[in-house]
Length: 217
Image 1: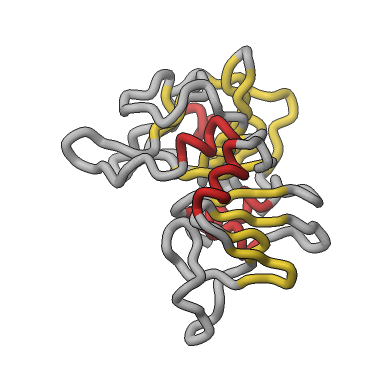
Image 2: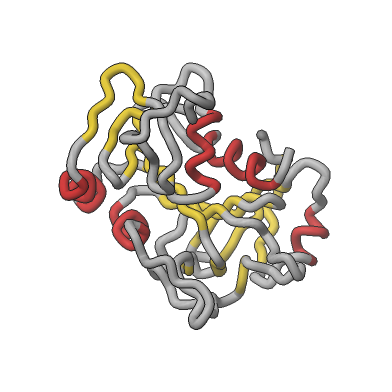
């Protein structure tokens, strides 16, 4: 199981019955493939759909149906499609219960940067800004470290922010961390990963929960 699947599976564990959930570009969209059994969640994509399901099989996709990253989706019974202005009215109106967004980096204050590396990478803000302040519960999903081993969970973000102090939960391929008023609390570690390893690989200051669990994936 690679890091992307670990993160996507763990995101899906946060879904509760009756929620309206938005899955952002990248790894979060994969969580649609791992919805918990018996839990009914209405998935929303900002490009204009409600009640979509897992990725269709090869040859069964509809080119007119896609998630926020442009990847094909399936529509479930009762689904609807609509214009983007209505989709953002849903987001800005506070009707999204939970969102999971990819990130370039996050920090212990609950800040997130996910749209721009100056001079290198700038795909545009997209719907992230609206989701980060409009959703009731916000998850950041990212690899714990970059390709050089540097922590992407920081004391303070260095890249331009998408929104400030908006995160509730951070899920990486190494750990699950809760953002609190007191700081970043380590709640879970991935299978095969120790608490000491997470501390060593993290720039941010961590508060170690009294009962750190193994991540359920």
